[in-house]
Length: 102
Image 1 (cartoon, one colour):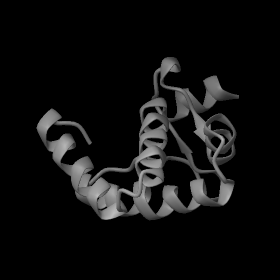
Image 2 (cartoon, one colour; image 1 turned 90 degrees about the vertical axis):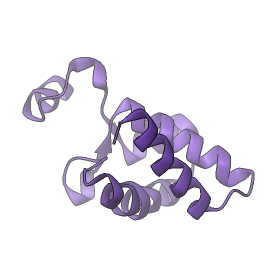
Image 3 (cartoon, one colour; image 1 turned 30 degrees about the horizontal axis):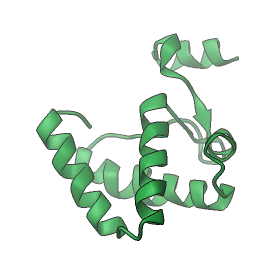
């Protein structure tokens, strides 16, 4: 199943595919938070700035790759330290421009 999805999406097998449920379980985060962040930040704010999508799949079956999974973990840790989502978004934009990534 995953190999077929990777092929359809032209993703290397090592990229990894993580559904919201997977992210929730792997990072021990509330599923509702993961879904909200996926739509609000990665599909919304971050994607608008990068002019690129961070998630893929259909609305009820959104998925992310391994690097975005790491971003979720970092986002959560920063929010736990009371860093505002606006500051995280600014840092994300700055780092993306500096490293010439999404």
